[in-house]
Length: 387
Image (cartoon, rainbow, N blue to C red):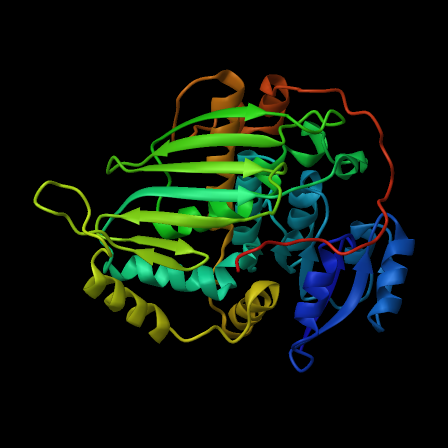
């Protein structure tokens, strides 16, 4: 039985709690921690948890409560500090996305994991969605041919008041806008499917709807890979409908999530045959439909994977290395957008965008943050639309 603590009891914490509660014979929530302890108390009551409440993660780690695993669900700028302190105390950690606010912090977290011989996993729960998991399998099968062009549509919508929360909309606290905090999901998927980072990145950043925020609310990036293929990543909190997805234009067919497959055939004049390559489409559909569904999806699926890793002494599917890759690509997008240049990867340790300080020095501040409130009203949140 693994004893679990959750640090940060805001909007995303219920996803972790509900996931953990699916495995009552394998784990137990023994502590909740929040700088607003009344929020932790309310969550304890809502889920009828038998646990202790703390207002500081250091106090929690120094207490006599036995803790094996710490879930970190705080704003990004403190992910590294809490993760490193937890791992130095011998605890395994699950860190919410994004892994950290900079590559320097990611590297410090990886070093702490190795030095303390613990497990660290970074939340990328959409790898545990059937639609994404099966898309990856279909792409890896090679039936559709090599990926020539990928379109990543990280389309979200957030109202003006979203950025009134005290830590949002500030480069120093949130670390960026939807490129970091929303498209992180889709960028992880792209890295996972492609199997590598691109060699070059260019991007444009904008803030078109949220004049109470320093950070971008829209970015469009173009990536070039070693084999010459391209990808486009749109990161947005201004898209009505939140119609998210990934489209892979492969040599022989299109694969997409939400699931869609198309395959063209050429006429003698080079134009497409009406109806396309029906035989190949049928073959891809048959393969896709043969892939078994995952037992658990979303956060629950990733939590189960981490429990398995800890119990069996294995590595989780999503590691700190994966989390770092995502941050590196996001840092390159920010560098390209802020400095208006083509950025080559990998980023070196002497690059300004390797550190938070370098980001803050170079970041474009679209507006001065206006309203700042401690907490928004508790309500449902959206965590992705992949239907």
